[in-house]
Length: 262
Image 1: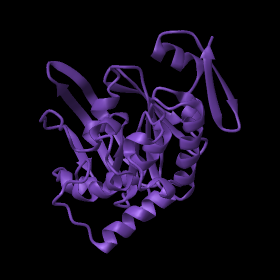
Image 2: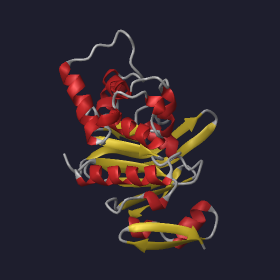
Image 3: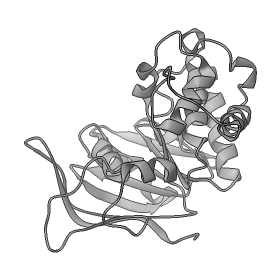
């Protein structure tokens, strides 16, 4: 399965209301190849995510191709098991008193939070506990979700995304609202997932949070792909300065990129 496409988009146009969010958009993402996707606000990142998770479809045109896992028609239920997604706004979907373990368990029913009529098998509970342990938060599983730190909540959300053992994990702006310590902890989690062979799609505003293990970078601009290249070719002074509209200077250390005003 490695290196076969799980997402193929060709000449796609996607409208969000009256706005053409993606235009003549083409991109291929493959199993076994983790990527980082960057771009300023309005570049098309959120719309691409919605294509990837099956929430939107492109305009119907003869030349347009949009395939997920080699299928042009898909069910959201199936995609939930094949793509794990973690978004910053997911934190707000749970009641403050929700038990942290139930945040993970409820993913097995496609729900956000435990409801009274949900029943879980021993296999379900074992899968949830394994995902929680993997993220290093088993000692917090009985705590109320709202009492956890922002970094701890993010780890439970990643466990929630991993409980199905998905083929692809998508992290959207994973460091949003995290303090320095929590952000560093989350980076360690990402690197461990990459080391264990997970296919990771990292969507971010910050080149500095791209782990060294991710070698491909896609820069979006105005609803299209500006650059799709190896990391050191994509993250250059001129390209990033033009993309974000201010002078920027890129330096490298041990595979990490640091971007500062130029």
